[in-house]
Image (cartoon, rainbow over all chains, first blue to last red; front, side):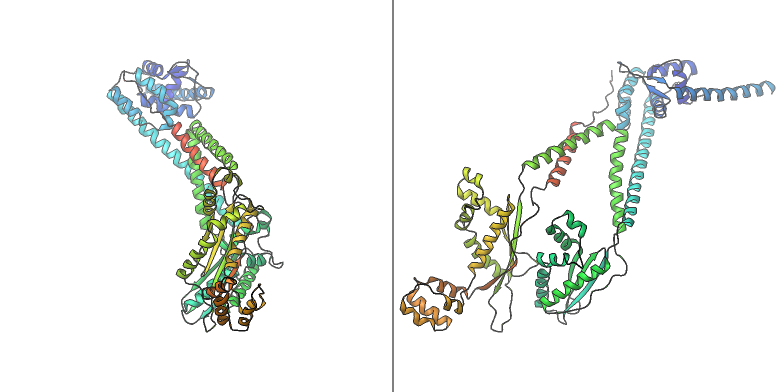
Length: 95
Length: 476
């Protein structure tokens, strides 16, 4: 599970965050360190697809939040991952 | 390390930096820099550049292709153009005199009067729609410059090919027939019947496609700019439009200027064989130099300027001495020799009042013509100036004897006779090929060009004023 876009959506699932906060959060929950170029490449793609959006801020740092379609995509992706995980676990148990 | 990160960040596409640059710089400020981050940012920059370039090219290519398709469709919708042509045989030898005659005759055949008659002939009724929108003068100019062509050929002797391009093939043929008949009459040559074109030769669909593609490319570039730099593009376009509006408004403050022109031909005295020849360039130049000095001199122009019914350059005369105003008039007055027309010259004058412009040209034409009026023997016989009785004896003599007689006795009383005698050795007459035109449309200022220049200047100024600021990443 190292797709940067999925990791960003997962990070924003519990609230808005700016780039640096996303990097730290992802490193904490997924143990994956996204480089600045990778992070912003994914942010650009997600914003273009309307899955995240910038939130107005006074700060130099730009926070983002997940949109309704972003949440839907995240749910579909995690459901799919869940099915894969359950299948893998079941097969490992019977092996 | 941060310096390398900042440098790598500068490699992102400009449009991307405008959108994400500030927050990306902020993120780079926060991270503990590593070499892997520098490589990561470099990779991200390259990816974004490729993406931006490919999106840009895709959009530009799509709009350009659409432009080309639209142009091709338009070229199929437009009516076909038919070219009719006819050849006039000048003779088996490469006689330059025949080419000269053809040129002269062509000029006469394509004069305003001649073409206006052809255009308005009830059975032809050419350029009907255009004539509703434009003055006839402009329609004639368009016909001469675009549709009507003459080509002097020197392949086997001298001949001329006359061709005319028009949407109606029968009318195209009729025009060529009419003009070549006139041309042949003027040049005393034989003419072959004009061809009836079978298939249209235009519109040139390839040219349409190239134009459509070019306009599409330009539109695509602007559209791409809108797509990735909408605000910047809008501002620059705003600058351009403001420049355009200001320039157009300023151009309306400049008064219209109209140019009237007339064409005259100088014919020297025929030689003993009676063959009419035209003046050589050097001969005409010398003649014109002499006449210009006489007719366009300060005295002559000052008379015209101060004529009560004309009252030219009224405001200028209030502020400047008359000599300066005469110089101003001279700048607006042109006497030129058209290269395609032997032994002829064009007088043109540009002024803010079209009627006065025409009047000035007419007055100058009259002076040129009057200056060359030769009093023939018959004229002198009819001329009854008050003269002493001892001159009567001279009347019955021949021209030269008469002139010798009266100049010998009464040179001061009757100087015109001496003048006339002298002029007989120079050009004999001036033909008025085209009288002074009454200009319909102003020749200046060209408001379209002024507005276009204003637009260009505004765009450049806008680009300069809104030039992008480079992305700065703090190194602290």
